[in-house]
Image (tube, rainbow, N blue to C red):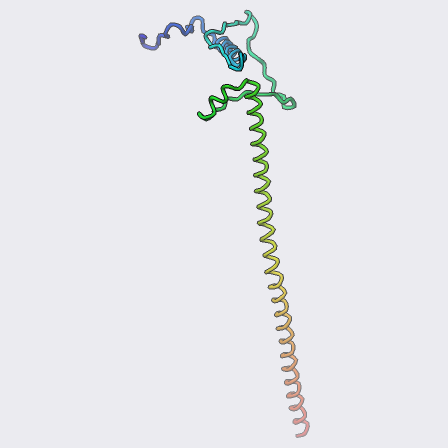
Length: 186
């Protein structure tokens, strides 16, 4: 590989040069190869897949767009493909499964996970409700008797205060009455 000032020589075999490089066409070719690679066939319960180099390039006719139009209509539920990583202990088993069985297993596990997550969330909500109900019950059990006790004491002291005031008024009235009678006698 020889370097010049601003040029980098691309190794042979990549098939991309400045003269014949068209980004859209290259992307289309790669997408088509990926689509073909994902279409696997089963031969006696073994999965076979051609490598990307063995797949012939189907170039779109000149003047036609090779891009796939994707619709983003939310009313239509479409299946999607995802890349997931399996732990090493499950790889051998997973590779033995057919593509349909893999999808079935994955979707079943995902459904179970969603159900378990909903159950966990329901349990958390129930736990929060029970904690709040317990706090309310304890608060009511403690505060209602305390409130009744405070009201009872307040009424009791109010009655005592009125009784003391009445006794003081009677003493004052009697003392004033006696003082007035003594003045009249003199």
